[in-house]
Image 1 (tube, rainbow, N blue to C red):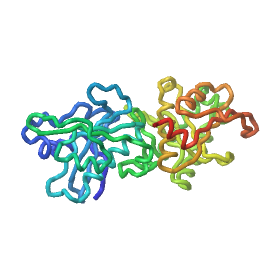
Image 2: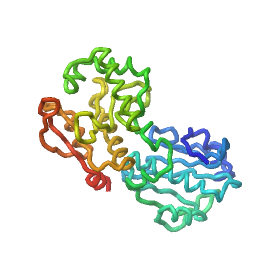
Image 3: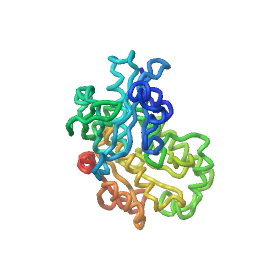
Image 4: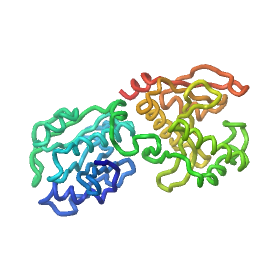
Length: 332
């Protein structure tokens, strides 16, 4: 049995056969299917698709809870039931919601499946109601906590590839050098990092080699940051162990054209989630040059706190820090 992300089209056969056999095929296309934040996940027995589920950023009707996500379209082949596929799908969806910063997962559960959802941590929140041609349902929900991420079996649960609403955060490739060197050649972008000047192509090649070696040694590191809409490399972000710094650091750097859109904050939040929920890191710090107000604002937005001035590479630097307990409390 394996579980991995799939596209919306692959969910529709099981949605129709299991969930909506008396409805037209068009009813198997749900609002939100193509949203960037949506996850469609399939569980496979060998090469055969045995079950599907989807999870969307959506609040229940009448609620404005921005931390709410909806589970929908969970269906398993009739002859594949009893093998734990439903629990595997549910874990994948819960893990995705945790990665995306969600705090609550809800669904319109079939009354006949309410016991299954209760075993998965859901609580019933309504009296039974009928959906025409489908049957009796109840509203159920469960909280989502950082611990759900570490326990989840979902796709991309390690550091190799991490997705947010607008970004893909992934391991570096040799073919990234041209785009990486172009970013490092931007005067304004590099003013507050490294040697405070643009890098030559040779210097960028050496820096990329350091990033790749960190991944080889530690199994994680600063990600290459892509814009999801275009696939374009726009910067770097993540957590790593600087060779001349005693703490695990979280850092971010985006090319000038992508400043001011909240993307650095989005990437930083992903780094915090990975470090604290998946790696069990106790404390993260960030080294920020005096005057780099934009990076200070990013640190503060993700819950980091000023931790004093430190001398790093012979120069005074502002430091920010956050512990796992502080991060967890901020998500409660």
